[in-house]
Figure 1 (cartoon, rainbow, N blue to C red):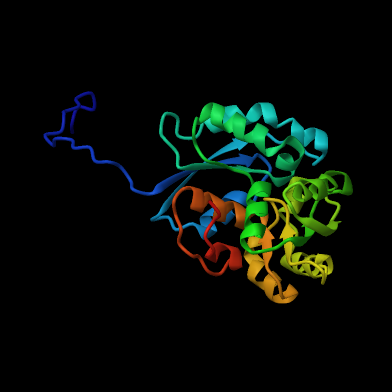
Figure 2: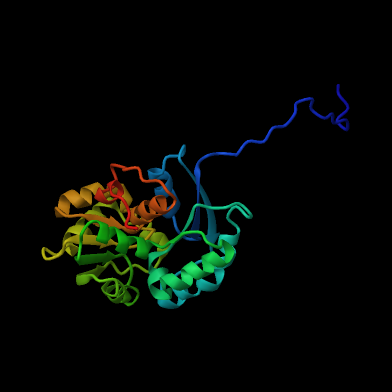
Length: 258
């Protein structure tokens, strides 16, 4: 038997190449979120994209105060993603927090840890996706309470949309949002879609809308944009991947605006 204390150097000479050619995408994910990461893995091809996530503490219930508490934690979470390795993009995984904190503050926090990296937020991606689809008049469905949902109207109005109506499911626990059934999503989407609107936005990275977004579009007869679908779309485009992806709504077949 070999002496376990004896370690011999290998005769093989080590050659280093340029590493994996995949795009490196960082994700900042809420500690309670059950859906954001799986949706990215569901849509992104592993031979084209590497996904690297860090979790950030989120304290239930979903209230404006608890959403805003995350801002001081964002930089530290982003810093943990592939330290000293350049990333092609970073996506922050909370729609409501982006609306309540603001895109610019979240982008600044992430770029403090990852200078120069493209930063994507779900609400910002949602607005870009709706524009890419040619929507101007929109309906919004959220899983949150009315208090958390109300600022969404101003957020999208400030980006040039006419918000026709905004409906919410009234949930407080982020983990419960991740358990909303497919049938509930379909029923709520149909109820929320105004005939006057060009498209429907389904908010929340915890909501499992990606799993049935094609069915939502067929049901309402118009484009539907969800937080995670839009986040994946804009993150891929900002990382330099322009491939059309089918099976997850019309948006993922489109190019991104400059």
